[in-house]
Image 1 (tube, one colour):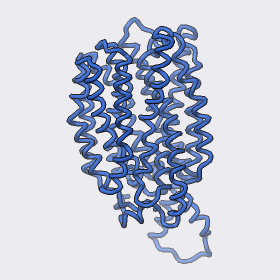
Image 2 (cartoon, one colour; image 1 turned 30 degrees about the vertical axis):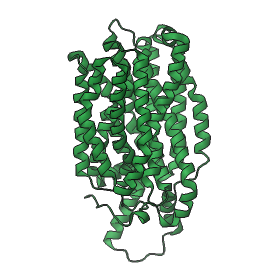
Image 3 (spheres, rainbow, N blue to C red; image 1 turned 135 degrees about the vertical axis):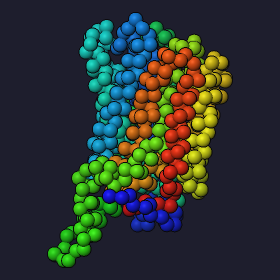
Image 4 (cartoon, rainbow, N blue to C red; image 1 turned 90 degrees about the vertical axis):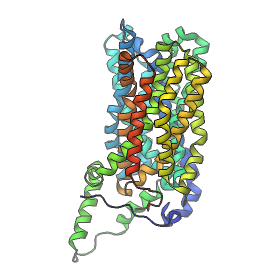
Length: 469
């Protein structure tokens, strides 16, 4: 089936269903905060693992006489969670598009919490032998399944509650979660390392950030169970309930085909996305792939590469990445608000161009081994990332109709994260084993950002899309 054109209209009317405008105004801020809390916790868990894999998990679970091989094994385990994300898209996308956004988000957060605490309780290779890395990979796969449904559901719940004309602003609030989760993980890891020392952290204290997730998940579950379901989802599914099938009447062929397509979408949303919107799915994936590479190479790979290959102190790398992430957070909401006024594409295109140009200078700054230079370069790079990723929280959901929106947006974002981010640390480790220069990271990242630029040029503006259909 060919792809249907995006429906457009008055942006103030299109931003949310007219019949839910009053509800959205009162409910939207609380829903956005609830989505942010959950997303922050999930990305905190992911960031804790990413930082731990860069610092200690290689020797603890994959001992080897070769430091590069140990790091590669730890990063491949990091990538394993991305391989299971598509399963999460299928599972939580089906739940979210059939049973509701809120149900999917509660289950995804609970699954992430169980898996993360489990990592903190695992025996190491020295204690359990081969069973230790097997259990670690298993828990990482569960984390990946959880993440497959988290981002799409969180931004979607916020966007579908948003008042008129502010869809991107509200959708971008949970999109702050990835950087905020990283900052929260750093706020736990750095003091722990300073108190117990690197030896103590490597020996046992690395478990503390994982175990603290118990408290965070409890708070997140409480917050998420207190918010209402998406008004767009309720209106869409409620319409069917309020209009039972009448007595037999004559029905046209187009109506029969439409009813058949809707029934198929309800049974298996991902199949419907692949059949009806393959172009939007591929281009949406490409639009987000460069930003994923920037994010994961900065907050995961460079935390290992800087200290082990260039002799940069670990605290220097963590501080540089944290300041850069904070700068990105600071401009996320203003950028999203601006995209509600002038459109998504202009800002995302500016971010993509900036990332292509800045990728090489950003990672070349590592050669200076100067904390101020690295921090400045990372700050500029992560602000370009915010230009790309702040509007994407509304942009990707706007590419798909309400009945397929959870699955479509999640699939595009998760594929981008997997291809651009999940394997980025492993690819970077391999590249640097052949070409010992941080410039390689810049060329690799810049090429993926160029892909995003080209895909954005091929996609339409979506700001005025009728979101309630």
